[in-house]
Image 1 (spheres, rainbow, N blue to C red):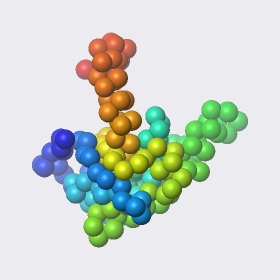
Image 2: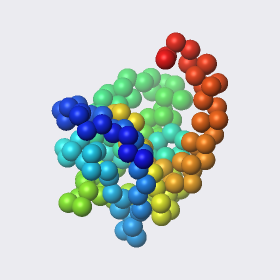
Image 3: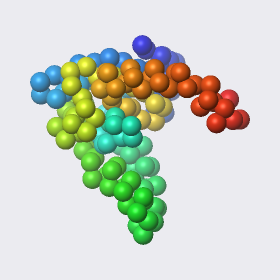
Image 4: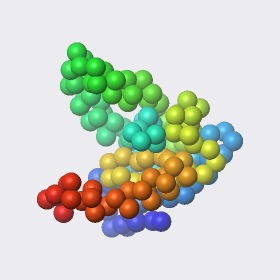
Length: 155
């Protein structure tokens, strides 16, 4: 499942690929070795969209926070999205074995059980329950032509 290139400039963040990992009884999950260096300065784990979790390196997290703070507090959807991202956030550290601890409330939100998929999405990492990821991926692959047509001009 590894799609991450080895000739990447380490000063720039680039997470790519999907990896299967197990969540241990203490709620720890390993982070792919190629992703760890970008998380050394700290990372933030929060509720994602589509019932997965988002994991951001500190510098990418700060960019997101800066954008969220620009949203108008007077708009209901803005307030809801800021709450989703910030109230559910947890600062995490990668331990010496390359793992992070997923808080129970985030495991519950994402429906994480034993097997999880860790996906690299360029500037962030997503963590999915394995079954949810397989269902999502299968559905999206079947709809790929329609999605591409809606995003006309992208490719």
